[in-house]
Length: 105
Image 1 (spheres, rainbow, N blue to C red):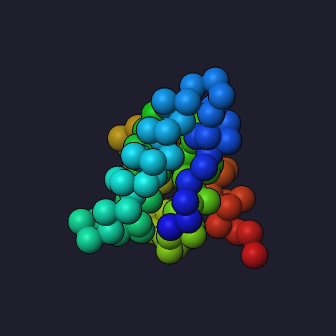
Image 2 (cartoon, rainbow, N blue to C red; image 1 turned 180 degrees about the horizontal axis):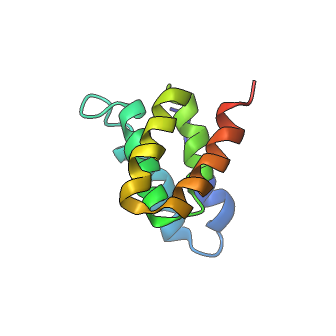
Image 3 (cartoon, rainbow, N blue to C red; image 1 turned 120 degrees about the horizontal axis):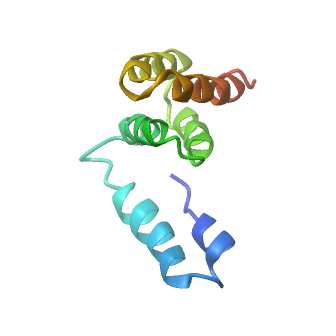
């Protein structure tokens, strides 16, 4: 996985400690623990969590999921499954993003 700099790029001057935790701990230490959980599986879990919250970060993580080998079929199944647990409107929103991202190419 490429070194994450989004924290420093977006919040480095305003909230340097948060930016450091985002880039170095979350995306550096936690996401790099590939022997415990693959990037593919971390992406599936993260997208599921963000979808249930209706979080705007879902778009960025859908892109990351695709880079981490999550297939269109897997993402469609994840969103369909969660629609019944998290709500139909959140599923529609997630499908709109996933359709754009997974149909690129």
